[in-house]
Length: 224
Length: 261
Image (cartoon, rainbow over all chains, first blue to last red; front, side, top):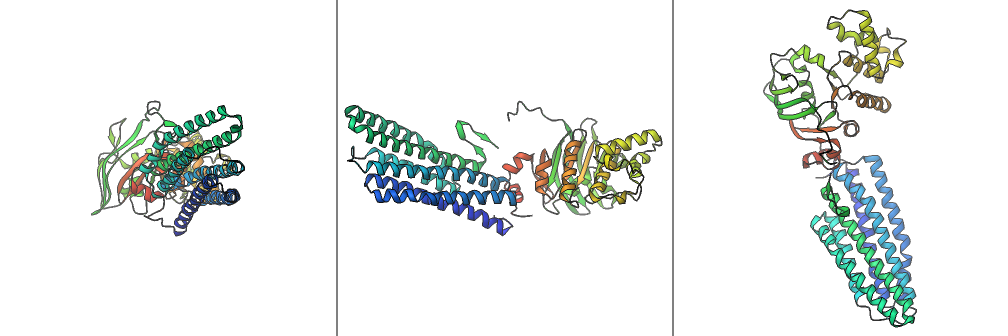
């Protein structure tokens, strides 16, 4: 059922659309940042870094819209949960964007040298993190608690990959000191991907709160 | 909050299977509700849902009009009295369940006489006692400081907000157990409204309060519990923080988020 106030209904839709647009841009940033690494495309890396301003601008616009709705509409119940979740989601998304920019920055540095090794696990980890991000955004749009729960369940796999990559890079460093610089840069990227998966997990937790009013953070389940 | 830590509030009045008819039209349908002592319960719902009708059952206001018909009980568990029972005197009920209306309605008398009115009806003539009760009621309604030097001025000379607080003082003078508010601030500006809301919160230490309001934010601000009525039925009654964050019924959800009503 729609709100009697058409302008309120329009504002809520506008907010949702803005968040989705931002989510889409961030998915692109992560994908392009990883491509700039695996395809050694420094031009693309630089382009990704330049997109950060756009994300920051979107964050400010979304914050502003949320504050405006809170001040003027005094939302309640599912509307209230939606707005408060948007305020938090936007922060997580912006951080994910920053991680994408960080990946592109490390790619720029790595692309100046010969590759340490063929990239196998990192792209796998990146695919997993991107899938989690996409699913949590889909769960947000479709208010899909089941999908959000799937995202929560997949975080452990990403953590495992992160540990495995780290171990492998340590072995490279132990073998030859000239590997150290590149291995450290790659371990940063692995760490960024792991953080992206964590932010996707936050998003998924917020979707559950938004839809059911159930707070599942920090392994607690508390209902309003 | 852990329910074990929270002391269960005492029940002041218990509504059981309440039906109410205006002639053949059923305005309230099988209402079951507990009113807790020293709490504020807000009744919300769209126009015509029965909230004012429900409120008026509590002081037998309907008895003033013909062709009305109650069924069920409003019990005071302490005394085992059903206040809508035919053997209970409506005048006595009104002394104990005082009503404050939408628009301030002082009598065309002095400030003092407005407050003393209920006591005089009870036959109290002792001047010192009346003085004391009037002062106390005006203090409890946060009006004393503004009127103490002009108690014998006509009540109509007061501002709208002051007149409403005078009506609250008049209601308090008979030391009621439950105060019934029927949209008490809908005719007042935001500052006068804030004062009445502040006062209502203060008063709940002494009395139990039932407030009908069209203003959802007011229900959210002042009440401990909120009951949502629709088409004469009680849809949901729960803690106000629950109702406004995550109501159980989709109907409540649609109403408070402004999707109908």
